[in-house]
Image 1: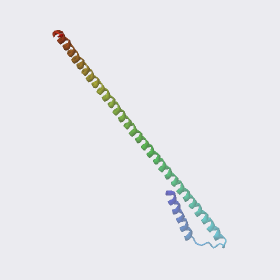
Image 2 (image 1 turned 60 degrees about the vertical axis):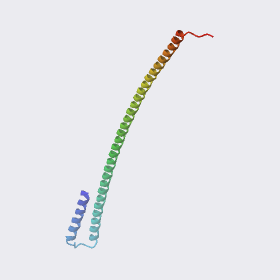
Image 3 (image 1 turned 180 degrees about the vertical axis):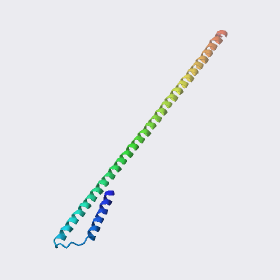
Image 4 (image 1 turned 45 degrees about the vertical axis):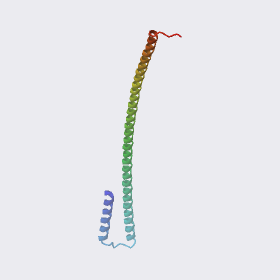
Length: 142
């Protein structure tokens, strides 16, 4: 941008200086040569200004691409971190559910064992009572 402005200012001064110079008393063919030279200089300056603009535009585009890539990398990194946290939370939930199931199974097994023991004890007492009562009471015969 600075080069463009400098080129425009230089061109302005060149045209102002040319306009203030006294007209040459030379022949008519000398004036077109001076105009051609001035036109070539102006064209060259315009070409340089255009090149500078293109170069500046390319640099701005490169900076934008670089920034976009950095943003994309940051987004990917953040997404991976979120996925990892979610995965760890899910693993913790599964582990907790397995521990709960194991504990519930152990409790159920203990209760079942206690019920079986109580039932066996009750059956044993009933059977013992039946044999004892049968032995004590004489059987009647008819």
